[in-house]
Image (cartoon, rainbow, N blue to C red):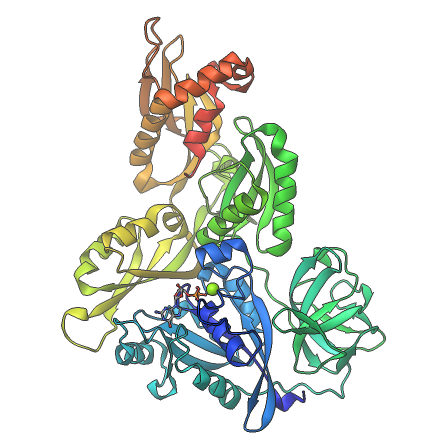
Length: 602
Ligand code: GDP
Ligand code: MG
């Protein structure tokens, strides 16, 4: 395939706008996969992981090539199926770097989230309106919205139904006509851009590359610009849609290589690959994604930790945007602190951990990284326990900053007041709004934008947004850096002794409410002791909320915690195991289950 018949493209879309369905239709229409006869359709061929099928989310970028005959010539179309949610922006940018164009896919009954448009790249965008078959589809209105929010010419928009296949042929034609072919040449030294990798039990690491120049053959000796390590190519080919070996990979093509690479870490995303003995200029790589949401993961049984850690390590081989650090807590034992790109990313990882490895785990409430600014340096803190107390180290800190996002919310105007309230109760700043429907009448919708602290979003914001707007609001956010904030660490004391696993970073405006809520929760969960136990919340030395757990009376045997829990405790005691698993917190005995209840997100 000479370069002029090659097209490299991605599909950019918000979750659920039909990206996987469209990808399948394209593969069918080009004969890359068989169309299932009546009975059923191919169910999202490119969504390979179980969690992707179940939740209908594309987690991992999947690449596939197809061959399409157009005006008498065979064209090689390379599709990179990218995840569309903002949490996965890293995956999106990785795949876009290997493309000259992208389909921007939008539901014809919703709106394009602006953050999906990755501005500066030199990319041809083909706007596609999907789900035309829906009764609520309103392509004219969406087209005018796309014009007003994204500056897209309505004439360029292709309206389709990925479900029925209507209009998909026109998409293929637009890919060939509008997206420029790659400009790479075959008569230059071999040079390729490594943009993804996965692990295969038999062949080792398989890398996906986009060839920027020259030709690669089986048996060639190649080297990585990043690690300087050398390899011999044992297999190469196209993703069609699974690996299909070929004799060569030419300039402009996208394909896979196997080269006896043993460790996933050797396949450095963004690396430049060249032939041994030939000098090439390395291409600009990627900024690795920064984890923005952290959570501790602990096994229910301490002895399961090695198994859990192994599962986590194996999972991170396929998702390298997750960061892993060991941590331990007196209450929960040995565990790991994982960093995620966002909350959806965290949920997906959790489900994969549970599904694929059958892991019995507890995941603590998510936190965000805070920045402590000292005179000459800055420190990022991902675990609240590490946050200095007011008064001691706190004195040398010039300011505390927290990550903020630029949030965009789109709602029918009837819900505007509720949304404003929701934003203000979550510390919104710089709120602005405008009408996005030029159309008249009851259907007018408003786009509301504001700066929100990330920590407000990782807890209950999304659920409240959905319930307060009866499900009509759509929400999207993008990173907006760090801002100064009045935050302090809240600790909890049982019988006067601080409990290490329980520390929260709380904004001044919420201190009292949070303190009261947590001491109440603790009061409910902690079983009575033989003596009276004060439960206190404190900022530094100052106690700001208190409950008192009354001493146990001899006749009180029931109703402390509800039947299920009681039975569990009795069972443990019978086995003499209960004793071992009771954690001493100063002078107070706490069953581990109480900690799980307090710290778990579920
Ligand atoms: P993705 O998250 O963007 O990959 O979206 P999917 O391809 O998984 O599609 C999300 C949902 O929308 C699935 O239930 C699809 O069956 C459905 N869907 C996709 N395209 C169409 C369409 O053209 N019409 C209708 N009615 N439903 C569609
Ligand atoms: Mg999908």
